[in-house]
Length: 470
Ligand SMILES: Nc1ncnc2c1ncn2[C@@H]1O[C@H](COP(=O)(O)OP(=O)(O)OP(=O)(O)O)[C@@H](O)[C@H]1O
Ligand SMILES: [Mg+2]
Image (cartoon, rainbow, N blue to C red; front, side):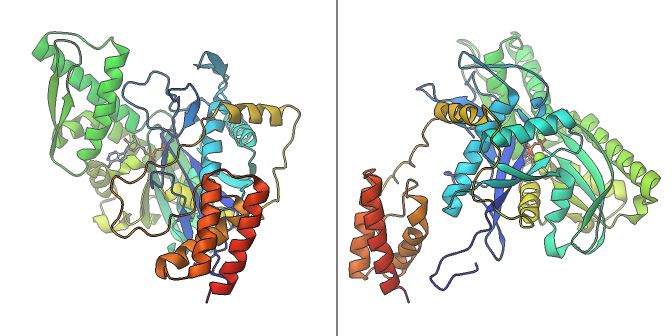
């Protein structure tokens, strides 16, 4: 990490956002390398779902629980459609639901960076039309983010190859939750050109989950002589279990869907082998390869670049973890597995690329868009959001408790010094006055002391830190 003589890190304050149909992620450049912003659970990606908590407040980034009726997933594909979404007894537009996710992503980035964030580079599907792009920009506006650029997913994925991307021609194979994109790109010296694309905005891991659900329902019907396929709550439960077991099958040969007490009389265990799963998804896998062929044909027609010119395949999207897909791709090109890039995390590729593109833009000191009504709409959405919960305390206190870390509510002005102090105290707990100043400041933050008091204690902390730091 690039460090200021005082020990502070410099973050580039334009972030990269990947807003997917099933998950979202944010990345930021810390001056020396690109970091994925990790949310309160420590994960680098956040479910692209919006729901409500027990108090009826909106929560963004929640996993779509198996029994929740009010969780909205897959908002990305509905952007720009004019669809109305019923939620919490109100009607929302897709861009408003999307804004809830953006507000949460922005908040997590701010906690991570320790400063307000006003700017983002946001990724968009190649196939997205004008209306979808506009809605995405509007959603960002509702989250008070200046969109510095919309960058297409395959361009972002190619950018993520970073410095290691030797100039050449790459096929980007992006199979996520809801969409599939195949693209042929040419990487030059720091440039990426899309030569040909093809895709399906309705093909991805969600479809595989549905295939497993249908299979499980058939098994249950045969064994228990009941047809549960028309009960939406049961379907949701099975889909939830199916998604978990599907991921298991990327590492194991066999798994079992455990579905206790589906009804008062039916509990089911449905075994599923990797082989059976592969057979189920085969038509979809074939379709991805057909679309890849289309993308290559488009690149040939427009740029004379064909199948034999492709140097490497880059995998993006969580569903490319399925081993059968990797095997089929290697077979398609007649290659060994080595030319299929599996060294990069497919869930993070697109967000990483966006973060790298973001470095080209200057951060603004505030949100620039202010069409009439936008601010009030934005404030209204924010008021509907639940206040983020503090993390639950660890079950058992550690043996020798160290100082507490700076809480999430630490004012941005003092976050850096609080963090730097915390790091220093972790290394060397015997720093007397600094420890006292830090303790008073943290207690005041935890007690939500008035701003003036926080400023006073923060300044005192800053002073002690200057004195104590090496
Ligand atoms: N280990 C795994 N094996 C199989 N599938 C997986 C695995 N890990 C994640 N997935 C699937 O990947 C999908 C999510 O991928 P990703 O997060 O890339 O999608 P997304 O970017 O949100 O969607 P999209 O790009 O389609 O808008 C889900 O369907 C998930 O079940
Ligand atoms: Mg994606």
